[in-house]
Image (cartoon, rainbow, N blue to C red; front, side, top):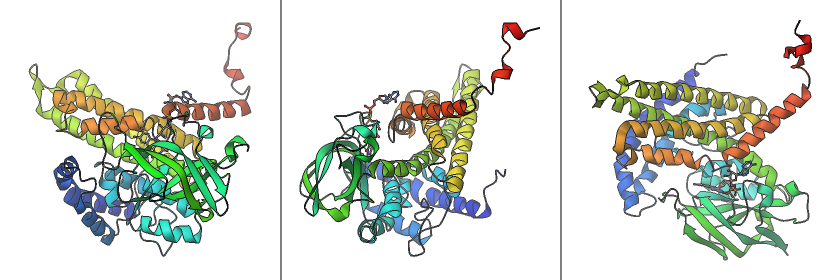
Length: 417
Ligand SMILES: Cc1cc2nc3c(=O)[nH]c(=O)nc-3n(C[C@H](O)[C@H](O)[C@H](O)COP(=O)(O)OP(=O)(O)OC[C@H]3O[C@@H](n4cnc5c(N)ncnc54)[C@H](O)[C@@H]3O)c2cc1C
């Protein structure tokens, strides 16, 4: 087992960190001002994207890039430390064309799209020319159980007709969002995991309405988390992704990489929160001591270091498993990190906020926003409880297969002499 990053990854880490420090971090106040002025997509981000692409820091997330597609060819394990660096600034991943939900959508198209679909949607996404959204969750049903999805995708001649209501659809408020991958029911009487399909619905299709951008923890993000109404939205049969009845399986394929990417970026956000906490604890004095000299604060710092390192190791192991054995074989590890990392994220940010006192809750530090994102991740891409259920289920299957193996370790009263 080698815990060092390879020379190539070390080089890319230096490059991504250098780019972040030199070109992105100085623009944070400018970005905030633009958003406050209602500009969802500040123009300078496009300039930064061009620069990142020219430096080869582009599409780092997609392991299976073809030779004719722009970007680096990295494994998940190689990408993890780079995503961690990008995670330090919420909007930075887009600069490298590595931001959710586009990355997950590109994964889907990469795996399942026809030649025509690749040309129309995957190519501009890989070029960073358009953005996309992924529409699964619905207000009327418990969507953590995807078999509940009700949106109807009905065949009519040479078209599909989409009817339903989705919400919390990230990215849909961005004017550059040109296509939604919509999950709905094509076969209401089919076996529960074969009822659903996915279709590509251009956002300018008649019958598609972005009803509102929902607030999340009382604020609105640049890309929006939107409610979308599909009312008799017609798309050609050629917009089906993969096959009818394949929606559930595609969702599983998408969510593996999507989840680990969130976790990788989260680790970077935890690191930033810990750095801020240490700085503050080293400069602020209360009751005759620096804050870090108070046992409680020292313990927060130590526990945060331990928890972040634990989380990172599990994320890296998961990435390694995905590379070696595929997302399906790593399903338990993916569920484990998705349940663990957002908890570490919110805990570390909470400690950092507390160390900053009132300032920690204000917009003068990124901490409140980082905490909010950690909280979001306890729901987005599936709530903690569903991931824990899945881990427990797999552990019980393992225990079932080894039934009785632990019996020799028991010492009942009749065997105690
Ligand atoms: C900011 C944000 C962005 C999002 N972006 C997207 C997006 O782009 N596209 C998209 O489709 N969705 C998106 N979502 C939605 C997210 O994926 C769903 O909210 C999530 O899957 C849960 O579905 P639900 O809200 O319908 O909760 P429900 O399914 O109603 O579940 C409610 C609660 O029930 C409990 N629960 C459920 N199942 C179990 C169980 N087995 N055991 C124990 N408890 C359980 C959990 O505590 C859960 O939180 C986003 C959400 C947020 C907050």
